[in-house]
Length: 408
Image (tube, rainbow, N blue to C red):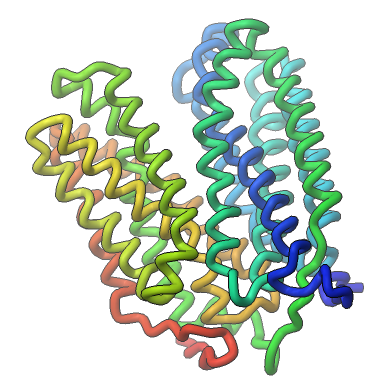
């Protein structure tokens, strides 16, 4: 039985109610835990590589496998979230992610860690994240943008808090005990979120659209194409910005500070969509966010000083935060809330493609040319094409008037 179609009837469970904001709290918590944990691997990198006497490539594979599994498993997790409900999938995510981290503390070989950490964290995070994010669209009507932005801020907060916390724990207890502590923490927090989440009360309006027709539609394909390109550009500074700063006479701390600034400003972008989207419209603000990301690389490529790099990080962070928070709302306005978990899961495979291609292509260009400028130019070109893909795309303001997608 598809439990996602069971609808609460009490006033407390209506859209935009207090119960709806409890769903936001659950989604915020899941985003905080999953992304905070995945992005904390940098703190584990050096001690794990030293203990196993492994190469950088072999050790970095932990993160690559985790990210790839997370984005590929998202479509499956979203589908089963739509079918069985978010509580079941979030509880499963708590068990798999928490168990994987705990088992990682006992590994004796690198390949064992690829299974326990790479697959365990990747699958567990997908099971918890996609279903809890997907239900928010059906829990809100008037305050949907504010709710999605608040929930999305959880990922940014997790990326700011969990990595340094992990580093402190590793210094005190070592990476094995820290992995076990984080596993227990993930299991508890995700388990609490599973106790809170409930299927959305909003029924689907009108005739249900075939999923195949949605993912083959012109609108979906243009959004997907744009997301791949703009996210490829986004991964370039994530990987190369600190090294660029050092190459130009700055310190490692100064380079890392720019990434922290980028992440911090992105939180304000996520939280601000409720105000901005209500004033200028969800679709227009989404296009502005993609434009800001693309235009920011101009500041980087001509930057004469560190101050310009600060401006670049802030501009990119604002656009990045707005874009990631607005994407669910854009998909809802185009395709409605029915099967949103599956649609989101399929859509975010674009990020997996970008994670593989972005650093690889930029690194190749820098190696061949011997200059970071060409790598930045590559990011500028990819970001510009990403904006061009959505610039003329018409997105209705409300799902009730969304036209049937045009299949290619």
